[in-house]
Length: 194
Length: 194
DNA sequence: TTGCTAGATGGAACGTGTTCTAGTTTCGGA
DNA sequence: TCCGAAACTAGAACACGTTCCATCTAGCAA
Image (cartoon, rainbow over all chains, first blue to last red; front, top):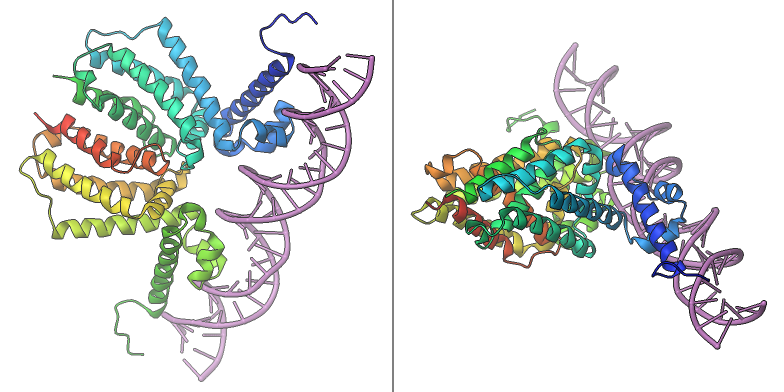
């Protein structure tokens, strides 16, 4: 058979299944949030058997974190197109983080679902969470762009932590919309202003 | 009837039930963590019917957060006895937070259970979480003790956020033991040193 | 082309959080 | 002392994440 793509037919089918599953999860999460992502429904909507779904993603949280990783990657790509504005490192970092916050706030149910998965305590998702974290860290580092203050140990770590906690806080209804951006703004300036 | 206590018999029985339930939850969580706190087991161990358990605590997360609130209150009381050491605000804050971290690290399963509940996205537990948060904030404020830098808007908020995120990170196996204390140390000094 | 095997399928089954129901007990007020 | 309401009990029932099984199918290798 003429095999145009680099991958085998099987691999392509599998990649397609994987994409369908993630798309279904994102779709269900976008209305309804975490609870609306029911594994039976995801399987049905992706036209895949339940057992197959579990072969691809060993748990609901793995699935949602995989979806989150895709979102974060796409955020990263968009940032490469439109780099952050500002002369001071703090300003650029704040610009990036605020943009991301606004994007998340535009899809509250989806964000709630993804963040819920991200706060799972199950150690078996630690690796997947780390991947998300690494991307975020690189986004922040790029925005800081070799600023001397931002190179100090822990700066990026602190910003990631505040980011995560602010997200959980917003998703849980403990902080009003907009608070995430403000918290990150305050943090960045506390840490990065001389 | 001679009624020695200020409360009615009913109120005392109810308070006792509540305590038994929380004690049972803490006991089960101390081995086994979150998953080991099964509502049927809690009910059995507290000698209470399942329906009664749900009358007192509308969900497993409410129950565990109530348990956490008790632990945090007791931490606060202990701190009143042994105030933090250090001449600089940052040092006192770090002292307090490190002590708390060590206490939590001594009971990893219990901590995992309580933190898991604390990261629940369910808005109906927001109030209970806020209570925990408020206590923690007052602990930090007391440690900073009117230090000028610590009065800036957001300082306590940032520390709480880092504290929470570091906990989740540790509980989820993404950070080694000791990292929580270090992260808080770094954060406090980044923010509070002049 | 054919056969072998990894992977897919549909659906039953299980565990645990949560809800519900029907009957029983407790206790404060009359 | 006695009554009624509120609270408690035992346990069935339900929902959804997860596991398991028997069967079938697609695609690679020979």
